[in-house]
Amino acid sequence: MEKRYLLGFDIGSSSVKASLVDADSGKCVASAFYPETEAPITAVKAGWAEQDPQMWWDNAKLSLKKIMQMSAAKADEIKAIGISYQMHGLVCVDKNHNVLRPAIIWCDSRAVPYGDKAFNALGAETCLTHILNSPGNFTAAKLAWVKENEPSVYDNIYKVMLPGDYIAMRLSGVANTTISGLSEGMFWDFKECKPAQFLLDYYGIDNSLLCDTVPTFSIHSKVSRLAAAETGLAEGTPITYRAGDQPNNALSLNVFNPGEIASTAGTSGVVYGVLGDVNYDPKSRVNTFAHVNHTDTQTRLGVLLCINGTGILNAWIRRNIAPSGIGYAEMNQLAEKISIGSEGVSVIPFGNGAERVLENKETGCAIRGINFNKHGREHIIRAAQEGIVFSFCYGMEVMQQMGMNIKKIHAGKANMFLSDIFRNTLAGVSGATIELYDTDGSVGAAKGAGIGAGIYKDNNEAFATLEKLSVIEPDESRRAEYLRAYAEWKEHLEMLICK
Image (cartoon, one colour):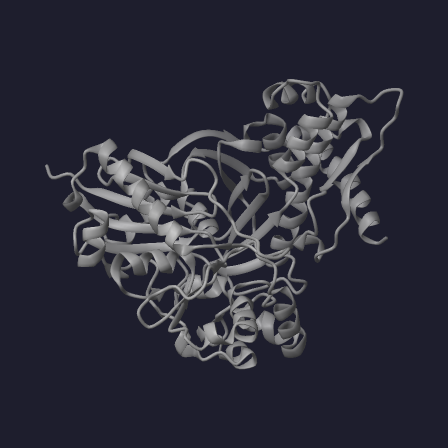
């Protein structure tokens, strides 16, 4: 039987990963990423962050070459290509598809004043009912910055695009995007179901600069003769899926339905939930975008909560509080000696800058309730993990206020989700079942391509082989203890907020 492979790219700010998936078995046969050390980010001024899009393309080609060698796959056996990418970036190209300036990437903050000014001028009601967010520091505001500060660049722009759109263009010679992509840039009007003309008019941006949209799961374009010669791919191979990294992470965990949650807890933490109705948070404490399966006839929105001080707090505890030389597994063992609620010690984990969920307030990290006669480092270690969980739950309450009924949390078995304390506390406070999987963004992009190409009839078939590693059910017998500890933590947080 002819081999059928699916190719997935994950265009990150630290590296580009490529994976090759056997379409029939659903198994990943090869993965590679470049560079093997973290890719450079240029900061010409404080708060700026730029990357050269050519670097993404070069690293994509290197990753592809490696997996083709590893797998011994033939180019014509690749039946579809999917792309995941770092969200909220801005790539500007001229009519010949040449990049006009380095990409302004997601962590660049120069456009904050442009988004804030638009929000105040247009009004909260207009912005929130149409684009579901404040214009903030997203792609539209970044383009407004270019228009005002680099007019010679702006005047030569043919199309603006996201990082994933750029890689698709390099593969095919065709510039297009998705509704999900436009929504993450604040270019999509959910009320009018078309590009957000009111915001474009405010910034004085011509809507011809936006790429045409294609459905997320469809034939977006095909590998061109030029790209085939450059990459070794077969000319005509279809590109059939693309999505930002957080929607794609949810897809990778088979999160498609209202009430389902995808979560990560690495250096920072993300809770991404699916909402079945158009809604928004009036205080903009979370962000709302079109999910991968959002259409004109089916509302599926991704509500994104980001917590800055997650794994970075746990790493700080390891360096500064835990006994010298021990690892995270040993820290977890120490923390397990302490009961739920850490015997009155609580940690507010917001020590990595302003938090959106706190309306951009900066409370700092705080440790409360230490009694010199009974508390030791193990109490602080546990309280830190509980505090991270409680910050997730605090944001999840915002999602619930928006109408999300949180029943299940999907996550990769990695980082903080390796800790029993973290998992049990999250299940205990939220009341949700946690399912842990072996997953990867580039593999998810490959399977998304399989859906878009019609190789899989739907997401359930595409992810039928997704390996579920464990299930954590809420311990109802201890739920009251978890909720009591959370209530005490929240009372402490609210005291800090009100200062």
